[in-house]
Length: 171
Length: 396
Image (cartoon, rainbow over all chains, first blue to last red):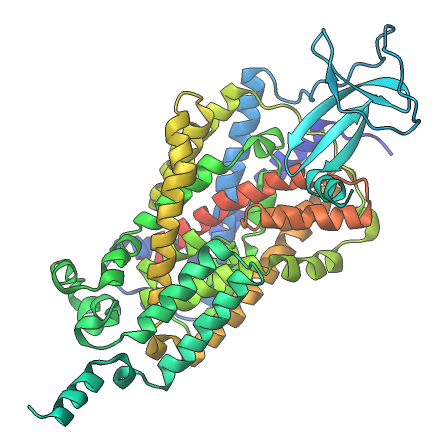
């Protein structure tokens, strides 16, 4: 299966938005153009009550459809803006920095127990390391409390703080 | 005045003489809500205030002791000539005074400011496509609106009922206080109750519309979002949304102002105040005043049951809309998006995102969807505000 790139997927959503806009245009051009008429009527006659605007289920359906389209349109505009802003700022599409591939050669001696978990320590170069089963691994930690992810050698693991706290309390 | 007359006067002045059967039922309902809030921890920060407001207002309904005068706000004279705020200030009860904040829309806007200050829009900025899920989940609003019209509610009432599907209490209150103030109590109670019940309502619908393979999808780690992007975002959203839908300016403007205080990095004190002190104070005022509007005569009607039923349907359709659109995105991206994050498009932050995380990890224990679900979740806040703004523009 071919891989879909970020640009392609973004394009597909822009195309989806364009399709929506086209549908709206055709919708308005056809005989069923009531939603915009309702809006215009609502704007023109402020004194007319809301009950007069909705004259039956067909009106309600028209308003519902228009409401969905407007929500999509506004969020689509925001989505396009965010995408463009990210590109302009120059960071759009960049992934979070990956963990360093290998542990440094001068790793300290490993603890005796094979599966002992050690708290992450900060090395001189600023990277984080964790010693697992006697081997020292470079890690990146992304905090998303109460859960956060730890990337060890390119593999991301979810850590649940609440669960850890429960386990600690039980111990 | 003899002894018996004094006793009679004391009795007539007591709360007992003014209590009808509706008052007793409302007191029982208030106690149930207090139980749900305290023991079951269903949205306790709001539900306890609402329940206590309901309890107090139904205990003292007579004369000068009344805390809340429903006629002043939703009576025929108020509807015809407008609210007499002078009368409210001179002779109003405690809740009447607090209710001014609801009626003028100040509390929901201030709550939104606090929500903005507490929300990290980073996951949404990192994955802008997730905004579409926030839009899709607003389907519930319009389905409930349509069904309410079929049940015979007026356009304004149906709009207020529909917004329950936005799963956003302040937005529901903001819209209802303008369009259908007489329905404020049942709509607020329904909105907050269902928000608390999201972990029970959503999972069956999420499983109904997805396969195990889809639920197991592990999503790529989100990119880092820079401080510049986070600062530009609230300013730009305010400009764009207020230009498109000016009616929603007070809600989204406050949401984005709160977020700007958080992200700009030079207003920590203000951000801290908005997130904590202001938010807590407004929550107390809002919950008590909304709860106190649930006076027996207005609340115990068939339409309250209809509103509660429609609210449930709105939540179900909102969840389904988000999940179905998530499936569309799953196929459009070649299986890169887990459809479960779509259900988080209802704006109950962060409850709905947590439900996505839990369901995702059930299908695949190494799955980590929380931050991916936060994107649609916070865009749902914007989406529900836009939906409310549209309904306000049409029906006010």
